[in-house]
Amino acid sequence: MERKVGIVGAGVSGLLACKYILSKGFHPIVFESQSSIGGVWTKALETTKLQTPKPFYQFSDFAWPSFVTEYFPDKHVVLDYVEAYAKHFHLLNHIKFNTKVAGIEYEGPRDEEIQSWSLWGGTGEPFSSRGKWKLIVEDLNTLSTEIYQVDFVIFCVGRFSGLPNIPEFPPNKGPEAFHGKVIHSMDYAAMDDEKAAEFIKGKRVIVVGFQKSALHIAMECCSANGVENPCTVLYRTAHWHLPDYLPWGFSLAYMYLNRFSELMVHKPSEGFLLGLLATILTPLRWAYSKFVESDIKRKLHLAKHGMVPTHSFLHEISSCLTSTVPEKFYDKVEDGEIKLKKAPSFSFCDNGVMVEDETVPIEADVVILATGFKGEKKLKDMFVSQTFQNFIVGSPDAATPLYRECIQPRIPQLAVIGYSESIANLYTSEIRCRWLAELLDGTFKLPSIEETEKDVRKWDDT
Image (cartoon, rainbow, N blue to C red; front, side, top):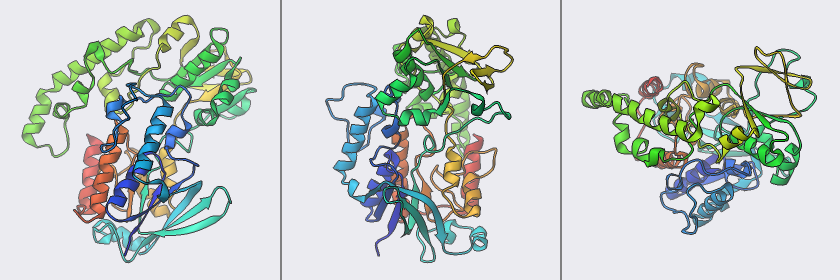
């Protein structure tokens, strides 16, 4: 009997999941709420470029076209590449566009029995004759609802889209107090390029945040307004944004993206010799970090702008927060087109925002909140069952509890791909899809729930 696998999302991870599921003879059904594939690339800012060097953002069996010579291609080139991959492997026929999965419900054993299991799914198998998933799917064109029943579900919804993270404010000090316009970076990115340019043209804009989207929006404000209406960027923490991947002319990949670099990091169950080696190499790990920091400070003149982070580059790259700074960003700061303002907290007033411990507001016409997304809540809300909602979230002080960053061992017949961050997301999503396809094909089985949860805790503590 042909097994049906429901895949939620047709971004890069969803396409990879579809391709590898097909390779094992299963029947994938991909649900995509947009009218096209590409995920976050379909709603990227006009100035967005690939943050990872092109060689580290490539499908293992589908190379970049030879005419793409840029090391960091822009969003249009990346989207063309992703679309070419989908067409090459005939994935489009398996995608239902403009369909939103409103919720999923497990039809099988009751919660009490599921909580008593010692093996994933009760038997350790990825499929079960006793249970299936019911997907409640909304057609966004006809506004109708349809029910699908599948044997396995793969979430490929990512964590940087869909549900914006809006800061909380005291009463009467939130966006409602402001007489201008307040939007999230997600809404700005959803505008077409012409409308976005018109939205900020001639306006005093405040951008809240200091990661990828915030920096790119600030640069677009510069292009629209110049020094006449400088863009103010409010940030809580300075970051080690990379000007390039060649610190002092030496490739960053040789330091952090190879087998040797793995030996410098302590890992669970590493054994005595590997643990000893990681300890011995600690000074080298520190030296690498200082080497990169010195290059960033030199190229971007961070000390001059008071933007030297208090944490190390090692901490930054270990947290997968590393990103490249837009070209000439700090030149715009130097010219007065961008103003950087440290703001541990802020609130709104009628004509702008008030930064903590200051008495004069920063006046503005538009405030754009580049404050991230609530990826965990988006994942949680997919489940109808409160029990499964609790399982997928885990404890408040730990990361989402996924074994091999894919499987919540207490939720049967379900996997999550592309939720955990890495320096090269395409690579990690692909290897996880290959691993998952082999799991579904019966090549191996998962350890007991107790062992998998213990493994998750170990990696979380590392």
